[in-house]
Image (cartoon, rainbow, N blue to C red; front, side, top):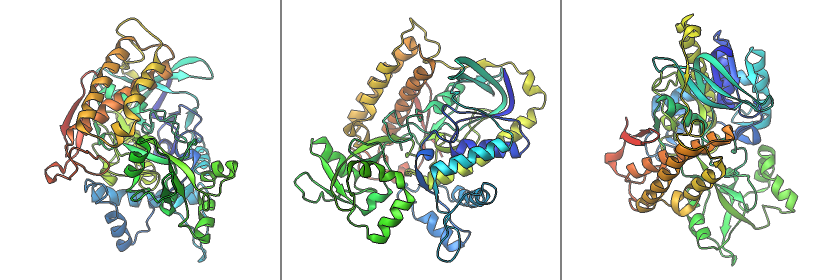
Length: 513
């Protein structure tokens, strides 16, 4: 049995900032990662922009106003300001303490609005280890532990390389496990299967914004690279060479989806980038160009086929609901950070890759780590004396005859969430049918799913995630942010609120603040 004041689950930016700041607050911290901390997850595989704005009032006002309409006016200005302040401080910390090699502009000042993911996460791992955090690599958590009062008391999991179960008794737990991309093969996202949301719900936590979950990234056909920022320089074409009118990276992906649904291919060329932009793009995102270089394609002059890959709540905004400035959940002792938590506070109903998500990961990680350390400290010696029981269900403790069927469960979920005409181009009748199918999948999984514990739990998390998504989407009978409904194409002023959801065997939704 491992003991700690704070257990952080995850290994990306939010997890490492949470672990670092919990340790700086004096806590004994354990970090458990499904992969190898610093290399697994969406950020470690790519470059990322950061919502980094110097503390100039006019610049801050413009930054906050720029995305409010896109997010359906559901963001909170107070939270936006907090994130901008904390991100500014964390990036300065990364530059000074982590010695991150930010590029320098013509005036000699560092350019701090972007990070190279591999280098960023390498340095975060170094900082975490130097702070005394114990890192458990290749050690996926499979369930939470709670005490007799329902407060979280640790977690249990499986150490892949040691081939053994393990448990961590902790005063507080931070879930920073990322969102859910449903094993769509989007680059860096195959560890993001919604595990943390399942763990939280099993302990009684709520979720919010799960209708904002139908994010699809543009990728060259046959590849996994979904970095979409550069497609703002693109022109999209039909198979016959004609321009595909209305197609674009931010507001025109539905045009791409509809065209692909007809069986026609969509082509692209980054022909709006001048020489300076092309040089800057290669420096900022070198791995974006690897698939092209390997195939002998010049994306600035050659047309190439594209597709859309589901990124779900990795680039959506839905996640575990947070209820205070320390990113506490509705369960005592449990905190959420990064993509595992809802980003509605700063994004409302629309986000994307990097930028706001990267800033939220830094900020929420810091706040959750500090708050978790304070909570654990408040328990004193009582923390170690508490009883602890596991609360995991589907995929761990079948109620009927066990069956090793995680592959079938994953396929069944993907059949309902990946097609553009079900998830992206949403309609109430289609959503209702999908919910019924997913409810049946959940009933079967709850009764029989067993075997490879890690994969079984991932499959169960994906089913749960899909059910929360679609039930929330049905509850929002309007189009707001990325939650678009073909049968309700207008924004309804009466629905200027959030949708809260939860439950496992019986999924519920309610109007939030």
